[in-house]
Image 1 (cartoon, rainbow, N blue to C red):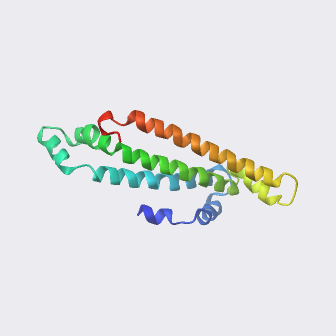
Image 2 (cartoon, rainbow, N blue to C red):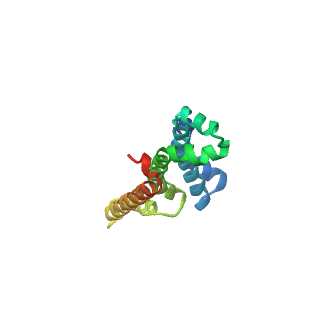
Image 3 (cartoon, one colour):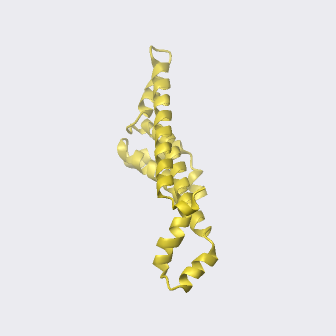
Length: 160
């Protein structure tokens, strides 16, 4: 199901949302939430189903409740996969956040669209390039921060 949601073109969804909720921040937030949840959800499912069933059965056999097994065994083992989904989602959202500026949402995408609308004029290309570089720098910083968080929160015994 998550793969189907990600095949919707972002401009098409943005057009539908603008028609329903109007211009501004609201369609931007809805769209970013829509596209951001899918990679995380998919990796949560993949991570949890990838946990060895023998380990889960052993934990249950030692008297752990279902909730304790989930919190103390399954989530820590699935955590690297889940954090990969968070990182992929964050990178995707950096690009989509630039697109939602088309609906008058906030962000650096506004500079890209204003540069495109002034193409041929003074500083149009500078505006586009500056905003693009700004988005790239923010994406690299965000990915680095999330990578550090993933390393700090992954149990030492399962780090790659």
